[in-house]
Image (tube, rainbow, N blue to C red; front, side, top):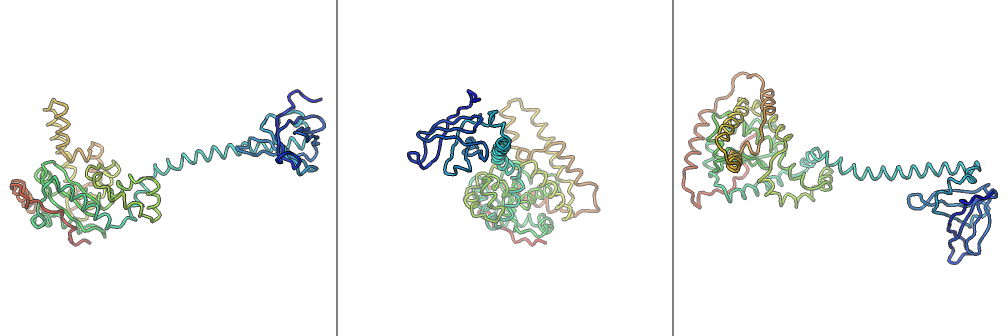
Length: 404
């Protein structure tokens, strides 16, 4: 008995049809699959009937028969696969089950592929820090030096720098122990003094480090100043600035750089100066610089306790000053003027971690207080000196200070 729901629209491919194909109708009965397409009609027995899924997303049911290999029928009505007449035939039922598994697999593969398209970029974004670290190692030191020099030159347009010859005389007695304690550094450091009253310092790719006059005059000891300097040097050694630049380059360029092709980063480096002038490091980079800075101070036999002492004193002074300021805008302006605390956010947790890293005093440390006092006196004179066109020094080139 033929069911009312056993008729389905279909298409057929056959040489006798106009253009080799046409539309028609097929139906199911106890005899098999009957079809009528234009003048082409007949019945395909269930025995040796072949049922397969195909088309986009397996949304078409193809019907062929061993006795009529030149005829292909297909329908987009998937309900045919649930027809009880078809399911009653064991071989057809087996093929329908296989087709169902294929369709489920197809959907699963599609969903899986779609999720993969989403997951891969997300995974790369989550791993961007690791990838930027690998990529940074592929960047030539010469690129970093050129970038650092470019940024320093831009900073010189608004800030006066102590002439290199004068700065070296008072800086080298203090900085040489730190630089000599660096393990096989690829950088030749250029450490300069900038006339800026904010209590700050900054490090640039390639070994450029600038110390603001305000930081030197505010520091209470050589250990405090050198603690901040060791922190900044660690930003250079760990390539944090370079990694910030790379992190803004996009996943494709970063992935290419990881595998050794850094050519795509050249344009990014050429335009990175504005970003580096206003950059802030991530909490992870700050922690890394804290940890590496403490290790550097210990290798140089400099008391590492100066760094947290300086931070804690700055925090206390900022808190006391802010309590006296009622105007919100004035409070924000003061925070920016504090410099180091605005670009190096501190917290009790960070200070506790620093204290833990430092641990108990390890023997005696070198005494650099005399050299520190000489530095402060030189900076006071530099700050008080009238500004002239000649007094603006060019960005200092990389220092040839020996390193071990």
